[in-house]
Length: 541
Ligand SMILES: [Zn+2]
Image (tube, rainbow, N blue to C red; front, top):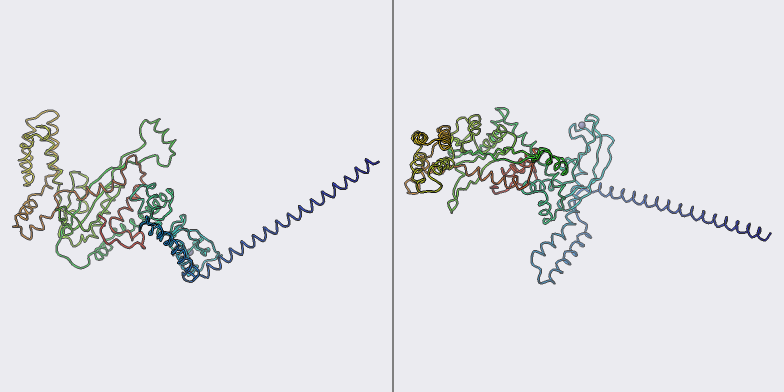
């Protein structure tokens, strides 16, 4: 009985305790739900307040409190440096830059927001009001850090797509957080150095760019550059448009001048299995026992006015203004680009056109197509080298006999006596046999192929007269004509500095995009791609 009483007593107690616990759990759940709802409401209220504040921005400004905080913060930073005698001006520069970052970020964010707010919510194409308009926040990486901007978007029934008109006005791309300044800087850095280096350099300038970001953004900008180039080249498709272009570039009339063109090529290593993983590439390498890569030609040309060519105090030739063309697509593409640049260099006003190149046949064929009236000149130094090659074969490298043999031939070449030169070589060829005979024969063919492009005598005579102080005005101009294609050779080397590093492979899309960017930069046309970037005042030679 006692046991039973005890038992029923304890059962009641247990039940009571269970009820208490259930009640407590219910209360806890209710409190939690309330807290969540409250927090949600607070968040929603905060978001609504942020949105309302953003939409109210009409112009960028900092509040008095923000300005006061900034001032105090700056003074504290500089005070700390003042107490450290070992810290130089560099520390002051760093600290001031750090201290300015947040106020500048705020100002930029507000100015961008004001621009977004002022943008009409209409279709950029049809200029009709957008339907079902809503607001959406977007994060943007800018020169001063991350910005958050609210902008309206809406549906255009005619286009059948959603439009974000403010993004267009702000110059933002669809799938990239980069601001126009960061778009430009990534493109510029990546044309000058590999991505991993660019990340480090950018970080020293206070820009946080991940390697992947730099690479992708530069690629995107390169494709954009190719589009702009395509539009500019399309202007060559009609005679009227070429006339328009010429009128734009002609400007005030200048004295007669010669337009100089130099053309060359170099090769680039491209990977044909671009996009595969490292393992897949290595496996392919094991199976094929060779690198899945190919060498491709990159065609380069430069054009400048002879009266823009002078010499430095040290006597080194210098060209104050010049234009470039560069592509790995085809010779035809190169010549189109070159022709466009030549028009910008006042091709229409030029007295004559002088083309200088080495003996490559494709160059002369392409020149005949595009610049049929041009004077063509075989690079004198290449021609000299060809004669020296035979001299070394016949008499040994750098021997007095080799020099003795080659000198009259060089003289004949420099006096434009091509017939005499070829005759001398033919006489030699008759005396030697076998491999050597074949080599001499090759040089005869080389000079025969180029005999119409051997014009050095007048220039050399003019230079001599200039040195003696007896040059006529005509000779002074003549003496300035280049005999070699050094200008294009140095251009090739400069491009190669970026594109031909050890172990570097390119994809066709990758190299053409970056080369296109680099060429816009060299031609002082960077602002065609990035209107906010003012044209540099000095030539980028
Ligand atoms: Zn539309």
